[in-house]
Length: 327
Image 1 (cartoon, helix red, strand yellow):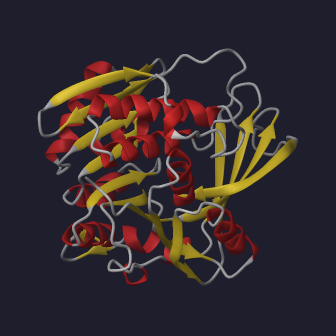
Image 2 (cartoon, rainbow, N blue to C red):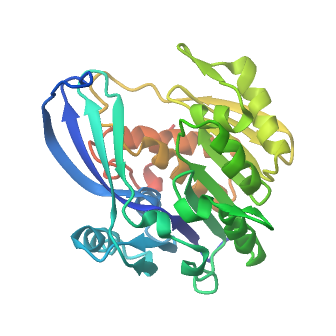
């Protein structure tokens, strides 16, 4: 039985979301409206976990600026009694993502001001104070220094994950979608040697294995199963999970069992915003793993959390307590 909680380390970001009528062509103008400011990055999963279970100990490790946005992040997290922010370091300037959501399609475009988050380094992580059962590192490919090469581990992020395992923690990774395909091999492959639970969407999984597993019609199921096993072969030990808007796919690395769980069907008009839905899925999956549940149940909980998240315009407020889980 896990009792020490979950540590979440990585990019701490403020999200500022706007609705737009239509994404403009280069040189053109579009109107932005309905600004919504919320915490992003690791804070999304932290808050989702805190909302799922207010008795779950959660520890946060990351870097915020000595500015108004840094104080906004810390104040927001302190609204949850089970969140420990004592491992957050303050220096420089807080990272901000500007999220533009097209009103009709709900498709999002992101503009990322990395601030000082890319300076977050191994020395900023106090593993003794972070003592937990699970350790999540996110977002790989956007971690700056931690994505850099390391002569012993491949990358500094891989070294972080190895240290977490040495301290008795199960490791989890999440990542961003990256346009430069060669970076997946350079950054993600070394990390997978020290990963217990792998989570990504279908685009990111395609980057990891080196070929697209989706097309204009969605996930190619003839390719997703091979991708799951290739990621296992790269080092993932417990679960490999790929989520998409229509279905979540998983591989139990111990039993070699594959599972597909379709997403919940949502009524017309239900979706208020899509920012943070992937983080909500990851939070549900990690929570299920922490509770010792099986992969099939974990995929259902992940899908349910994502669906809850879609009901709100911001990143977190749609996520409900686990006691309300219904699939």
